[in-house]
Image (cartoon, rainbow, N blue to C red; front, side, top):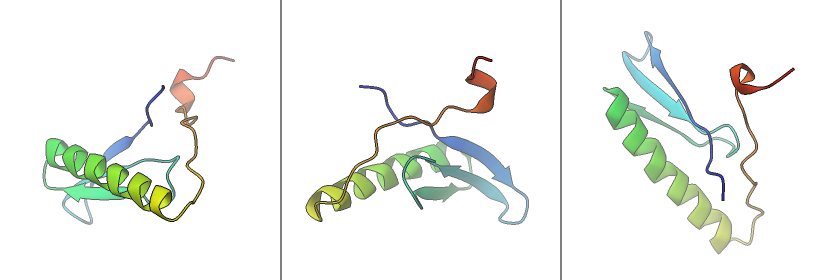
Length: 72
């Protein structure tokens, strides 16, 4: 199974890194370092999926691909 793509970027406003998973609505995390943001978003992903399963909500299949990976 393909895994979910995540975005990781530095936020000047927050003075830290933000990671999010576009396929999972509102699934994001913050960290002072890139590694911390990644660890936290992976925890958020597991919590998101666990909550969806527990509440019989649909789980989207991974499909997001950044524009740089799309072939014309």
